[in-house]
Image (cartoon, rainbow, N blue to C red; front, side, top):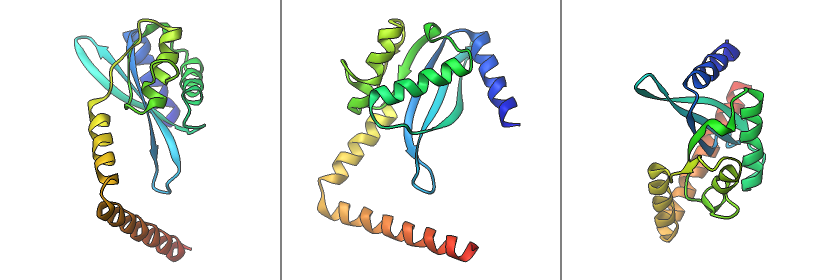
Length: 159
């Protein structure tokens, strides 16, 4: 069923022809880091955004993420030359003008304009603001410890 959904989304992307991509690193419930791949495209006059898949994170370097997204495109027969936009956070691995993911995509397709993601930018501001306050750091470390403890207790109880 998952393959059919994936194929339906890929077919819709191909029918639309032009698309933009968004790639982000996010941990799952078990704190395993993975990449999310999202496509935006038009269906008629309506913009559509579709989550395509999770990818195991091969690393946090731009080249690693570039290789991952290129493999997804290749495996699904989606042409990189039809990419017209890319949106990521402002972390240097994504946004770097010379070595970031956006620059590697633009090197392959000059029409794949990069636009920083406003939601990610706001998230980074919040993260940096929280990191400069020692009481905030202590609070969030405490919350993380509680989460880890409860997750471990849940796993023990399930076994």
